[in-house]
Length: 327
Image 1 (tube, rainbow, N blue to C red):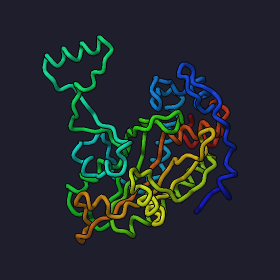
Image 2: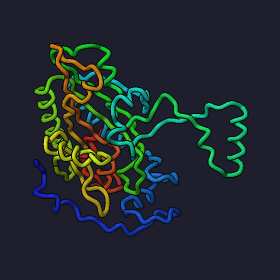
Image 3: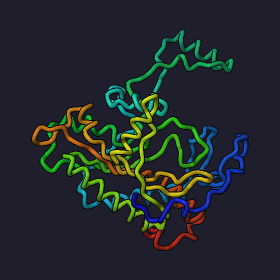
Image 4: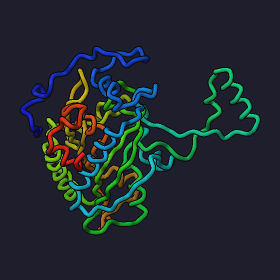
């Protein structure tokens, strides 16, 4: 494990979650309450879904621009997709095999006039009307990189040097929480590498170093550790253990939430040939392509900055504000 701190115990002390969000009746960490009191996050009545203030957005936009600057020499192809993906591609990705509890589907009313009348009756009576909705052909994007793999596969074999793609999107994961870093809708910025194993491993190591340098530039206390995804089901632990044993995923952890371990704000992933098994991603010599990505949680990094530097931008270190575009 590489780390900027000797061990996790040196991270800022956790504060017991001892305050409540007004009107919810829930006990919640003090940091979330402070964000709400300062009108930086605006509660909507649904845990993990917030409005954001101008101050919050200025930090997030500065953070995104800083990631762009860090990757300028990659000459990446820029692709932007809406926060939805075709249901067929989603099913092919095998996401439901590992993370069914996080998936979000898009449903719409597809009935006739009589069905509409029935829906209105239920709405008027305060009864459940959702069975009048039917699945559409799109689902909510769970990770920014997912839409690009079928697109790359349709282009045919990769060039000898492989490809680097820059993607950014709102993502959805159904995990309602009072931890401000565990939003249901959040922004993810990624650089995705497609090529052979050597190219992917070199890319990942480069971004691990750049991610740590970026955190240092922002004066964020952090540590790097081997990690695994939260796989679901009886075999989930075995898959997670295998991922950790092979060191396929590293996370840059930053203390943000009260009474909780440090939060993963960046991740550096080696997918091996998973996506080329799902889609026909091939290298220039016809072999299965390998893929990897460096992912930056824009909202988590924004919250980490607010937690470590305070809610008043005027009191932040001048070098940090300058790095974020002079906010």
